[in-house]
Image 1 (cartoon, rainbow over the protein chains, first blue to last red):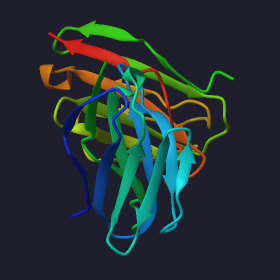
Image 2: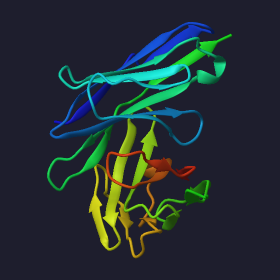
Image 3: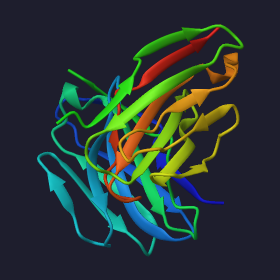
Image 4: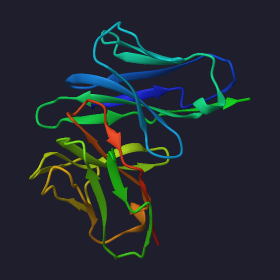
Length: 113
Length: 112
């Protein structure tokens, strides 16, 4: 069965800490892996990864994909209270006619001042 | 650009009532989908469409209908609301499956 597993489920850190969020997956026909940030509203797009070993970076956030070991990590350095959110990982599956995104349950990050 | 416009933001229904959640996008995306999000269950796909005139069921389609008469619009119909349909609903669109998906603002639906 296709699945996406994120860990940890929740995390509490202090401002300035560095955090690493994990996303592992098992899908029939991998197309892409996407990271989203969800505050108290709709998810907003962070990164899309399709190739192993190529880091995507945006400010203090970065992400990398390992297609051999079937996982991705999202790093946030020098965390700020505004980073508090649920971080969602989704994998695009191209299996036959049943193409879809498979979502993890998310990691809830709380950054305390 | 408006992106994905989803209405209403909030809705309270009585058991057995029907309603339609509206979703429109102005990005000329072929792929549109509806999700529900419940605590501890993540985003679950209800229905999706890969283009005008084409719809298909997702993970949790029972109790919901969709249609895609135009590229822009993808309404979700609740046929006879049940308390189990209390949830937050999101519409999303993307150029292709597996590429960046843009989400509507969400609808918080309560069925009493």
